[in-house]
Image (cartoon, rainbow, N blue to C red; front, top):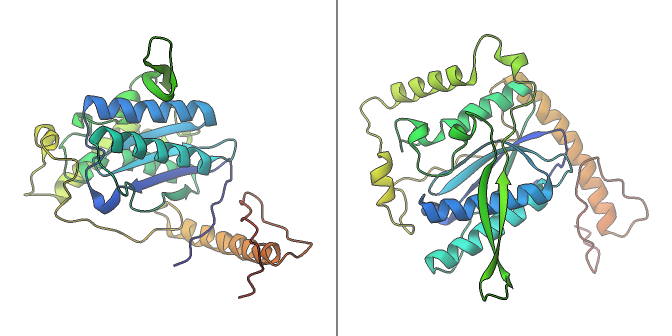
Length: 292
């Protein structure tokens, strides 16, 4: 199945998701793993100037709600995924694939959609039946970070830089969390805390009679374990609960995609004029034209 090209619109707020290979628990939370992931995320947020509005790292996948003002989401995610996989494979002394497939990038067309995505990320540990209260999740989670929005400090070890003392150079980085822009225009009399509480109540109603694992059971899991059931839902074209918004976004995206494919064909067949649509990434030029 062909992959759709990435859209790099700097104004777009995006819900990013990626899962580990075969849903194994490579991201299982503990102090060491949390520090490794936090150091990677904070370092590359600083380098690529990414705005992060929410994040959660579960045992076999993670979600980010971000905006890339410099149109570099793809570069940011490439480095984050590379470093997390490299460092955790070394930490566990394992080899082979780490991520299941490339990350999913779902634009949030409206600020209401972005707010829904924010609540979705905050409630994610409860939604997956892990903890009854999202604040109990032992891994990296923005729920505590959102209480004060103060920077969180993490350390990043540079294994290619050996100091005179014989130890690897370690740099300190601050993970910054930004308030969702213009959220007050859609919140009205409701706060994010109220929306989260309502969502948790909905989840517990849906899971009536089912138990939550809770932190102690989660910590006893092995990184190479797999869940009994692993769902893989189809990738939506955007993140929205509004049908009208989805239809409008789909029409605009299909028009953008048609323009991209036309320009891509012209580019690969060495034609003089190939106008790629705005916020697209030009493909590599092949050694010989592909006419099919």
